Image 1: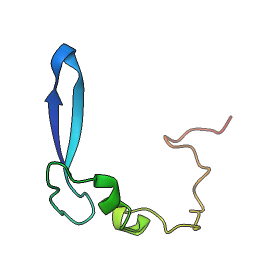
Image 2 (image 1 turned 180 degrees about the horizontal axis):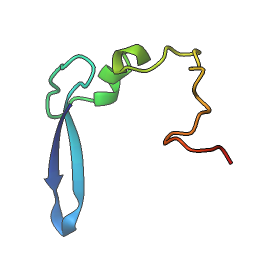
Image 3 (image 1 turned 135 degrees about the horizontal axis):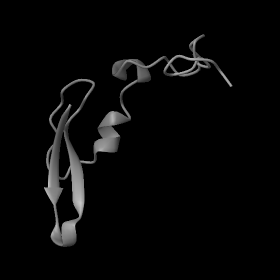
Amino acid sequence: MSLTTDTYAQGRVVNILTGCPACGYEFSPNERRYKHLGEHEPEDFGLDPLGVVDDRHDEPLFGGDRT
């Protein structure tokens, strides 16, 4: 994934997505990222399809017992 970081006046830090993590498309500086990303399906990002729930969804993330 391609990210750049800009620091503005008074220390404001902004991360900017420069390339699509799913297909590698390079964004122009003023392009709306959400429009392109919205054209992808969840599977493009390694996620389950919409409406499909993994059987392991309620397992502990880092092992151990459920409490």
